[in-house]
Structures are given as structure tokens and as C-alpha cells.
Image (cartoon, rainbow, N blue to C red; front, side, top):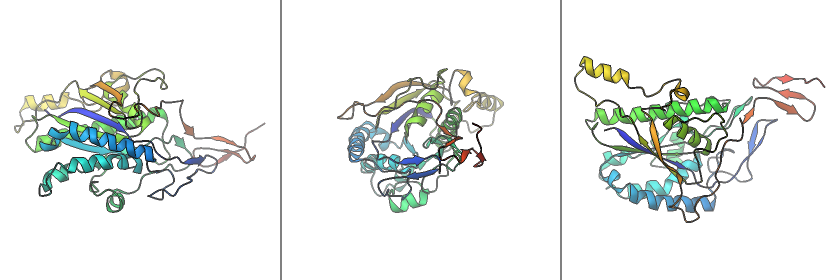
Length: 324
């Protein structure tokens, strides 16, 4: 049995940044560790949330860690990796130093396809620091050899494109882990995936996994409190792997679909479809549910009026003189 359940964790409470949409410049009041202005660390309260989450997950995942049935993915933005920092320390404490293979398997895989949503813009939107730098300077348990399966467009995306991006990324992650265990001859084992991400992609993830997409993007269906945990259990598993190339096996493999481009209308979701068991559960946090978020229309900086009278900047960076 391949990936059976997915836990999705939102990062903890973070520091803020600001954006001037007329210049496309992000700024911050504090120097952030990566020196990228839209890549803040956690606030002190967020650090406490991450520590409480680590205590909870290290105990909940103890058997999975012992049996090498856990894989961890994350956005590469600093706030997500910092949220995972106490989690990974607690997890790796349970693995002997000489068990190099199991420790390597637990390295966090940074997937940009599950990264932050900044909206569509005429300017280049923020990207995280490179995995090699993040590993060398901050997070030694990050797998800097992993290459993201999906990369957001440099000018950002509209809300429907965000959902499609997240659906593609989830499908690739799930398929990769399924195939990883099948190649190792362990395709009959139940595997858990932990993902750390951001509010908007987490909501999109719930919709992509379950296939339950509201007519109004702003509907508050899937929740995402800081350090809240959502849990999804797979409905339809892929066919068991086989060392033979029989016609029946090939037919079964082809029938199973990890990603349907029309996933928003097929009613099942990606990779066999999933049921939501926890919807941003916060029982492990002493302060409970905090800083929930939901969509408020399509965040876009494609065009806007220049209040200095210099016209409107558009998505290609040009200037359009509005007529009064």
C-alpha cells in the first residue's frame, strides 16, 4: 500500500513585509535571515507554536519514523522551514546516527509547487532562497539534491492558476513517493507524507485532494490556522506494483490517474481522491486556533492606477495612459 495519508501543516505566526505595487518592491522593517524582503522568519509566538507542534508530531509519528514510513515536503520559504526545525530535530532524535539511510530518507524535500501565492503581477514575484544555501546556512536536514517538480511562474498567478499549480505539485509528490516505495519492494506498506506550507496553497490543496471545489473561490471550506494540522486519507489506491509486465498490469496502471487536467470538474480530486479527516486541527496548540485566513477575491497586481498621474502599469511592464 503506497501513500495512505497526508498531513498538511501551516507555518507558525510570522513577521510581516510590505509591497509597493507601483514599484513592485517588497520591503520589511527587519533584516530577515535570508535577506529576502518577502521571506520573513517566525515571530516569537510562531516559534512557540512550532515547538508545540514538534512535541505532538514526534510522538504521533514515532512508529512511522521507526519503520521508515514517513516522507516530509515543504515550501522553501524560510517561515515554513523554520516551523519544521523543531519538528525535524525531534524526529531525527529518534533515529540512530549510524542509520544513515533512514536519516537521509527523512530529509525535507523543498517543493516550490507548494510554495506561497503572491498574486499575478507585472513585476517578478518573490522566490525563496536556493536549497543549497538554505541547507548550508540554516537547515542541515534539507535535501538540497531534490529538484522541485513544479515551479510557479515568475510573475505570479491568478487564483484559478494557483489551484492548478498546487494540484499538479501534489499529484507529482504523491506519485513520486508511491514509485519510490514500489522500487524498493515496499509497495505494500502504508506511507504518510507531511507537508508544511502557506494559507492559500493549503486551501487549494484541500480542494485538489478532495475534488470539492466551491463555485465561489472565497468560500470558507478548508481552514488554515497558524500551525494548524489538516489530515487527508486516500480513497482509491493505485494498483499494486508488479515485477512482470503483464497486459493486465499495464492496463491497470494506465487506468489509474494521478492528475487529470480537468480535476476541478471530475469530482474526485488528484491521485485517487482523498477524504478530509482534520480541517486545520489545533488541539496540540496551547492557544488553539489563531490567524485563520481565506481568499478575498483574486489577488492581482496586473494593472493599477498610478496615483502620481504617470498612467497605469500593466502586466507586461508597460504604461497605459488612462483617459479621464
